Image 1 (cartoon, rainbow, N blue to C red):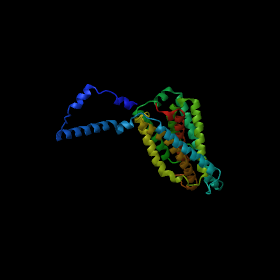
Image 2 (image 1 turned 90 degrees about the horizontal axis):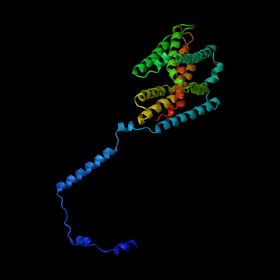
Image 3 (image 1 turned 135 degrees about the vertical axis):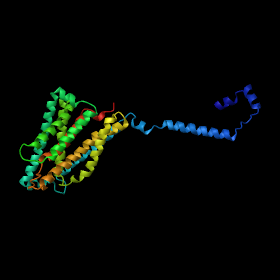
Length: 336
């Protein structure tokens, strides 16, 4: 019906005159045609280049939920593996014997070494908690610990590394001596560094402490029930992972987590760091048992050092606690 309507429409005079007028073709020279094609290609390339963002623009673009969701998924996978390992080794389903199977055969000096190591581990946690409580009662110390800037960060890192090097370089001796004093100073410095995080609230800190205790207890059980050298081969990959997490932590100081790159670095430092130090706890636990079993008894110059061994699992526990507390405080959703 529409086609019929168009066919029955009259032809206007203007259309008739146009039909009677001959059409003169427009001719272009070869130079004009070449310039037309060049200009068209140049404008097309310019439009394409403008639509494609640079690498820097992509890195500093507003962050979505991808990096955080990937970190949560990886952490959930690690938790499932940890629970699976706890059930597998804890229930005795493995065909290989674990360290706990040899515990009844240990001589007394091996039992004393492990007992003293975990005694210093508990004392380290208590010393850091006491140091954090003392810092909370001193506004001057809290103001000093909460200062921002590269000078404050440099002093903090230097104090941590310096005190750790001093305490681990001193030989262990029975009784109260210089090594014990250096150990208390080192744990006190770490407690002062953690003190500002306790301002998030007592209930939140207590929850993080309980969660950390559950994680550390479960991983220690896996390490004790697993075959003796199951996790001792993880030293190389863990060292590489430590470098990656450290670089991500430094990078997150420059890039806010609201950008794509900053969100990725923050996710690696938070979720990747939690998985990394969980692996370090498995490694250090079996390393303590191995050293307690094989370290010479009559090494007078350098006897077995329970303080140095306790510091390793103490640092693992402290790093796990800091990341758990950060996630409970909402650090895993920093996209604003």
